[in-house]
Image (cartoon, rainbow, N blue to C red; front, side, top):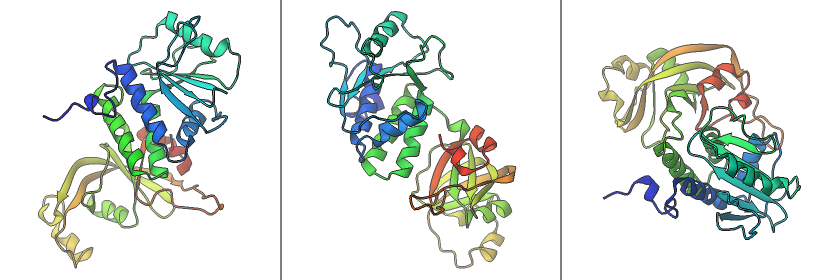
Length: 314
């Protein structure tokens, strides 16, 4: 019998769900191949641009506080030779315990070390008013989107696997399900003209996509059209999809077509951006680079507001 996602070894160290989720997140941070860069990226995005003081880290779950005067044990601790501490408290509901909050706050307020941080991760859409300003806040959707962005920029099979499993975990717990708001962005030199003329996109079979309701193409240094995904079919021979792919397509676009398995999206164009969203991606040398050569993701709200591609990032 297959195991429930919450029982898998990566996530199974704790019976309490909050500790389980935090343990999985800390496992991801431990696996980061660039030593602290992922945590630095998270902090940069949720703490007004303030990153890590240093990147040599010790990562622990729960059983780390020996001080009997402090009756507070957040779910996780990230430290650097105890020169600074970053505490993590995970909340799987909208309820924030006031007594616990006050006790947790002492961990950073009484030390009066600005490098110490306390991060609350909750289910709220907006920052709860109950949280004091000295506490850093984010929610599971924002955190998951940051993790997804990072794994696209920093290829690492082990890290990618853990992030995918973490997404399954928090989705199974009802903390994250953004597919109705998710936009897939793919390289569109070939795909965009086909989508505009024939209302579909077909790529090589076996290519993995997150569930999404929308698709857009990055082509000619811009993103101009937004499509709704009406149907997705995996590992199909598009020549057999006569309902969606007319014979004329093969004569005009792929006269040398050979049967092969592809991932197929039936599309409907719903929006044209005017002006188009321009690429403003630059590499370390200052040269312009492609926004994506494979695929990336954003949200419907972001793509409708964006003027340049950097605004599509979380």
